[in-house]
Each structure stands twice: as structure tokens, then as C-alpha cells.
Image 1 (spheres, rainbow, N blue to C red):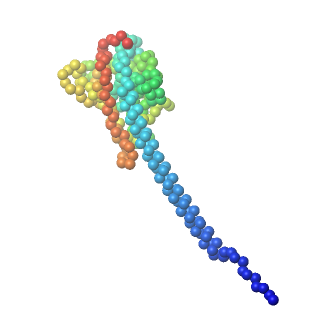
Image 2: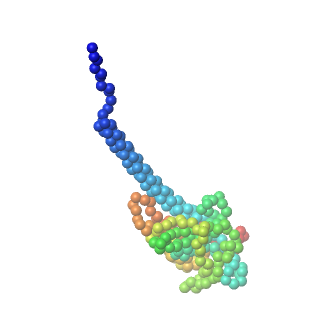
Length: 247
């Protein structure tokens, strides 16, 4: 009596192809989902870093201006050394130079720094950028910033400063700006009964009541934090023409 062999259980080639196809589609879908997620994370992280950079630059700018020291030193250039003293502050539309107790690298804990804030052209000539030079304070080095003296249209004395220079250690505070301008709250005539006014340059030797930095982005983007104007009041009551014992 013969026995019939039962067919062995298994899968057909078509079932294998269907399974492989479904698995491939599942892997592709997961890969696409992960790629979209990583791209979204990278874009969000980039925007957060840009926002932090803008907020940090504005905070550094405010603290540096708030830490200004009202120093009066002998002028080391333009003739006889020490013949005349000058207030260590340069206030122009594109340049601010002063001595501050705040440092970009050391914060409020370091030694005073000679600060040079100035505006230069942007990359490939597009827009402008705000840059910063920091040098540890030394009276002789600060005195060499003065190249002589002049007068304004009203006959008031002004200090002539050397122009700032871009070096390998120049730090970019703000980039891709449409414009960046400095203005100063000052008295047009000292001790005159008139209110202070904002001017693009300090018209006398001394210190302003406040400093304003106006900035605007080259390409506005509502989804990112944009550079804004910064106004810093200066509470300084020293007169540069009067001698003080701590000088």
C-alpha cells in the first residue's frame, strides 16, 4: 500500500517579492521622516543660534558702553608730549573709542580695556558690519590715540584721534546690516539753559549724556530676531577741564 507525500509548507516567490517591497517602502518612509525631522531641527537650531548671537551682541554693546571710564590723559601725539590733556572719548557717526571696565572676553572681572567700536563694509561690499577692537588699558597706549587738537565751527576745542584699524583680533559684533550709525545726546553749548540734543558727532571734548546705536538688517526676516537700536545713558558728572586727585 503506497503513501502519498504531503507538500512541504513554505512561501512562494511572489510572497517574498511582496514582503521585500513592503519592507523597502517602510524603510524609505522612515528615512524620509527622519530626514525631515533632522532638517527641521537644524533650521530651528540655526535660528536659535542667530537669535542668541543678536541678543548677545546687543547685551555686550550695552555693557561696554555702560562701563565707560571718564579718563583725562596727556596727549602723546601731535607735538610736545604731555603739553595738553584730553578726554579719552571719541564720538563720531562711525567710530566710538573709549576706555571701559567691561571686556568681551573677561566681562566685568577683567582689567579695563581700550575699546574701538567702528563700522566697516560688509563681505563683498554688501551692507556694513559693526566690529570691535579691545586692547588692555595702558595710559601711554591710550595717550597715543590722540594725534593733536582742533576746533569745531563754534570755536570749541576738539581732540583729533588716529583712525581705527582692522586687525587679526578684530571681532565682528553685528554683520549683514543695511546701516549702523552712532549718535550722542549732548549739550550744544556747555552750561547753557537749553535742552540736550542728539547729534551724529560729539561737538566738544568730553562725554555725552547718552549714546545711541541705530542698526537695521540688510535682509529683514520676521522669523528671526533682528538687530534693533540700542540707547545707553551715561551717568558721568566729571568735567574734563577740571583736575581730580585720582588722575
